[in-house]
Amino acid sequence: MLKKRLVACLLIRDGLIVQSIGFKRYLPIGQPRFPIEFVAKWDVDEIVLLDMSATSKNRVLDTEVLELLSRSCFVPLAVGGGIKSVDDVRRIVRAGADKVTVNAHAVARPGLISEIADVFGSQCVVVSIDCRLEKDGRYQVYTHSGTRPTGLTPEAWAQRVEELGAGEIFLNSIDRDGSKQGYDIELIRRVCDSVSIPVIACGGVGSYTHFATGIIEGRASAVAAANIFHYIEHSTIVAKAHLLRSGVDVRLDSDANYEGREFDESGRLIMLSGDRLSNIEFKRGKKDFL
Image 1 (spheres, rainbow, N blue to C red):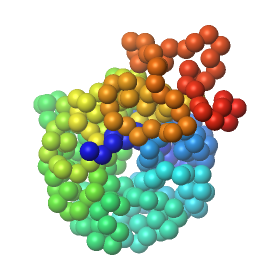
Image 2: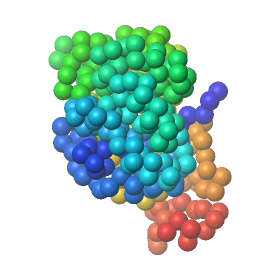
Image 3: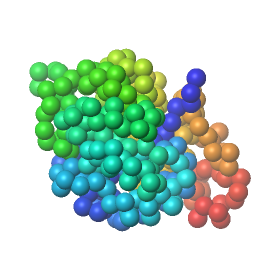
Image 4: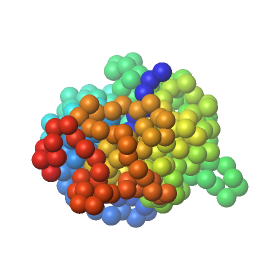
């Protein structure tokens, strides 16, 4: 069985990395280079980089920015935002991306998924699905940063994109985005049970306990988050320590010691007196990580 993955999601809006809250409020973090260097340096398995303003402005992510970021990234990098043709994908891959994510343009023209898969392979195509729970209890797929309803259910759309050649699904809950309430387990389970391709769950992480829940209860192949990784040193290492403690078979860094960690009820690592490195020890020595 494949090991479960921890994925960092970095959101770009108007050239800056931001925190997203409900797809409505955006808190600026800073220039893209530094957050991506942070998560690539520590212990994340993949990075998803999404330009949230690309589709509305009828453009794709600046390839010069992507080339700069890819030099600092040594884990698989999936890039999305405004992709609407094989030529767009070709430019993004040449600039350093390993995969692309498509959303609004795939809904508008589903054949785009097959076109990309035919040229670059299914493993290159990640379909991003943003969902909202409606008042009548149904889930609906939205595009354009959660502003345009599509009339599609996430299960039906997930099955369709798999048929068209998508290799993976990036599933995001609009309602849970930035809420810190945890993943929408019902949504994740519905989509995971409807397809055979990997599903990356995203939206709502506010505690390290939420990662394990997304895998164990939601049955996701990978768990992703954005906001929780900002500002917190070694947050990706702590997240994996918690996954390991919960019995999840997750990829581990050979230079980190994950065992013997204690967590409080909220999932935060219990600090030892004078422990500057969040109680995480590294074989290479603390000085290499300061």
